[in-house]
Image 1 (tube, helix red, strand yellow):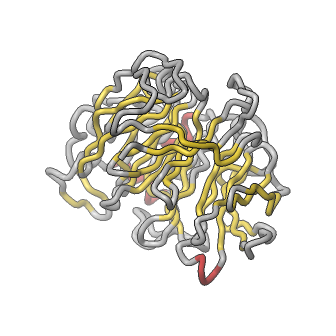
Image 2 (tube, one colour):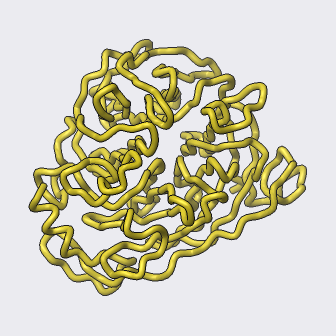
Length: 381
């Protein structure tokens, strides 16, 4: 880990794909182009979404076409199985639900869940080799730490969880928690700095990082330090991870008082927190691709579908669509502003739609009668 500290201290971080030079396992370049700054719409009172009062939704506008499930207890993670059914975690209850053919069934309960504030049972991911190993992974807060656990699912019940990665700092706030498998079969894990800012730059801590591990929880081959699970550092609280159709990894990150961020995640980069929030003036840190004011976003879940990134905004009470072209993201557009309240998780469903969760019963929202819900969103392609 100390070797990783020395290496990271010399990094001048990647910006786009130009002017790169290799120095050992890390890339160096200028800090990249300025981030796009989001321009919000005015709040909408139309259930059809966005700030445009249209009843039929013009081509290209997303619209809610149904409710997948209702009256859930802070739904946080969603992962689809090969049969197109889904597993859903509830942050505060520690329950895992199975949604199939319109029915919601409890199939597991992670007993060691210690939920308080923003912690609890968070992300969930299904192994790329599920047909062979039936493996499912979850990110859970315990009394001791945040950890990644592995379970198996027989179609009816989840097995008892077995820890594969432990020692991630836990706290009342900023627990990260998103899991995302990469095309190469390794697992990315987002963590937060739990309100202790110094952890984000500390190479001996797993807090405030994006980690990359195998299905056994070991550091994945090709990591910056072969003995460490750390892939990138300098994060405040990442709750969204998504790969685009070119294999680029994107992450949504909560800012403090000024800027929330969308970042392009690349090996060995330092994203600046707590030294930088939003665009930095120093070449040491990687600039975000898009920034929002914190009242427009507080970004959580992130998905890629139809050539766009789709980002759920908690405090912003909206869904953002961001254009993606290669390794550049721009032109954010917001929808459903103020209509469904806090939006937590966004995932691309096998049928080509989005599943979008509300998070209004998490102690910070204004719940509607059937909250919390999973909304079925057609993107307007």
